View: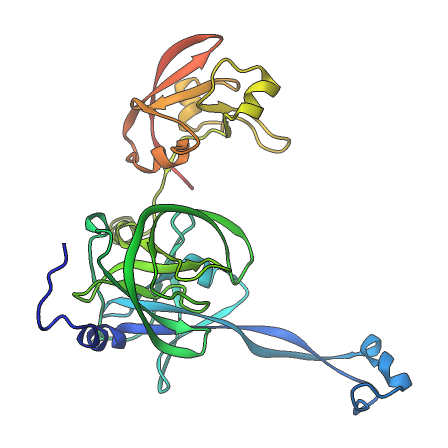
Length: 349
C-alpha cells in the first residue's frame, strides 16, 4: 500500500532517485571500409562509380557505439542492476555513465537468463543508491515512475503512470541480440518505456524500485513491462552468499502436452509435461536429479508437490518456486499408472 505524504511528490521522488540512475553505452570494434576510387560522385549521378560499393577496401577496425541502455545503483560501492539482454554481447564493451564527467568500465558479476537480470560492478565508492521495494505488495492503480536513458540519448528521462497489470507474460525480442525470450510475472504499466529505457528502475511514490524496465509493445500505446524487483533481490542475495546466481534444476527435456501433441503421440493425458528426447539432446540428463530418481523417457509429469502442470502453469515456472536441495514429490504417469517419485532438486549449471 502506498504511503502518500506531502513529501512524496513526484518531483521530490525523481530528485531523490535520479542521481543513482545510470546510462550504459555499448560499443564494439567494427570493420571500417573505404572506396579505392576516392570521393564518390553526387548521389544519383550516372557513373561507373555506382559500382564502387563492390570494391570497398578494408581500413581496419574502429570502436563504434552500437547501442545504449540503463541501470541503477543498488550498492554504494558500485553495484548496479540492469537487464541481462542489455549486456549480453560478449564481444561488446560496456561503460557506465553517471554524468558527462564520470564514466566507468563495467564488470559483469552475474547474469540471470531466466529472469533477464544482470548485476554489474564499477570501481567507485560512496555512490547514491536506489532503495529496493517489495514487488509482492503491488496494487493495481498505484503510481509507477519510470526513469531511464531513452533512445540511448536522453538521460534521466522521466515518465509517470500507474501499475496497470500484474503477473503478465510476454515473449519479447531483445533490442541488442534480437533473440526471443519468454518473460513471466511482469509488471504492466502505462508509464512510457522506450528503447534505451531497458534496465532502468520502475519506482513507487516513495522512491523505491519496484521493477526493472524491460519491454514495450510496438503498435500499442501506454503498454510497457517491468521485471519484478523481488527476482533481482534474490539474485543479489545469491551472489552475496554463493558468489553466483542459482536456479533449480530437474534435468529433463520435456514438451508441454497440447491437443496436437496428445493426438500425434496418442497420449493418455490432456495435461502435463511429456519427457522426450531430441536429435542432439537426451530426454534425461545423465546423473541429474531426474536420472537419480529413476524418471524415464516417455513419463508424463502431472504434478510437482500437488501443483498441476498446465500450459498456463508450466513445469519451469513451478520449479522456479522450489529450493535447491529440496525434496519434491512428482506425480508421474507411466504405462497408464500414476506413481509418486521423490526428487532432490539440483542446481542449474
